[in-house]
Image 1 (tube, one colour):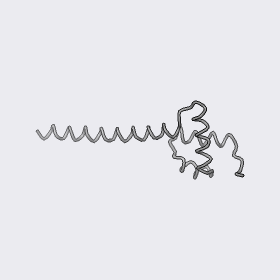
Image 2: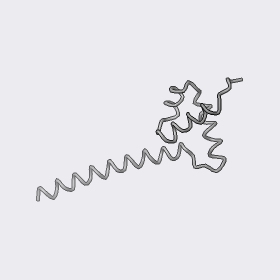
Image 3: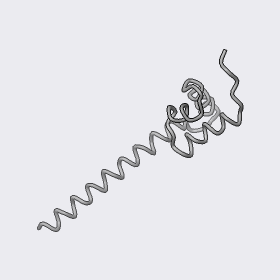
Image 4: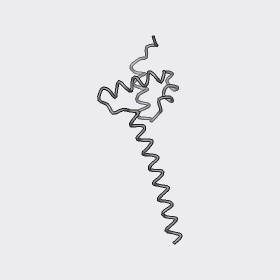
Length: 84
């Protein structure tokens, strides 16, 4: 059986993923807990009516990528206008 992890540590790990945007692997390394345990905690939260933290972080990353693409397209459009 695995070692007991205090609730305060669990809360800190989940908060670092949710608020700071750490990946599960980064949080596991930082707090010296297994990724399996973290996924279990996140699953418990999602099953209790919370939005999945992993899904929210994925959406945030995708949103950032889209913003970068839009920025590049706008720069290209401005260059095209100047060359006319």
